[in-house]
Length: 217
Image (cartoon, rainbow, N blue to C red; front, side, top):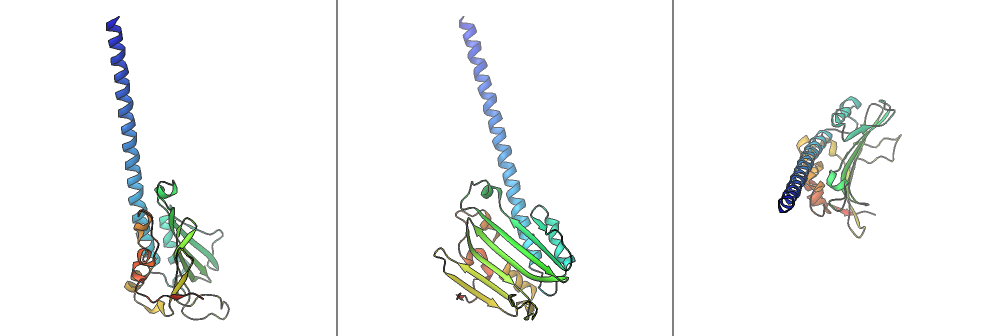
């Protein structure tokens, strides 16, 4: 009887050890998958934005804009899409945010609108839950009489927690060299995983923090 109980206890301990090993193995696999996904998302976001920063409204063609689609996991184009009218959108959100494991939920999104063969506008937003602390819109260098509503040059907007809004404008932004475009427009992709996210233009678009922001009226 004693031997039987001893064997039974040994079997239970063996099963517990197996279950623990399997659980630890699954946790390890999950951590590796999350880490790989995190690195892939951050690298893809950095490269995708660097590519988009080379685009200029009124100059960049649809064929050139479609180079964004190499990041198809994050980018898509409108349907139908033609040289007369097309939009290409890319969206970056880390799975930890999507699963609700980090708060607030946050994402970068940028859209490129093509009209009559060339890019008409580029629109960027950083979103935290329902808030948009920073956004920018870049339009043509000069006023288009057929579309007077379009923004002229670059406009970067901010909104704080009290909904106060400011804006910085650069009308001749298309004439600036590429390295300056990268400096001003390149987002801090680490905001995707930063604890508590990012709230200020200094955090989100570090290169634009030196610009002069005025209250939006």
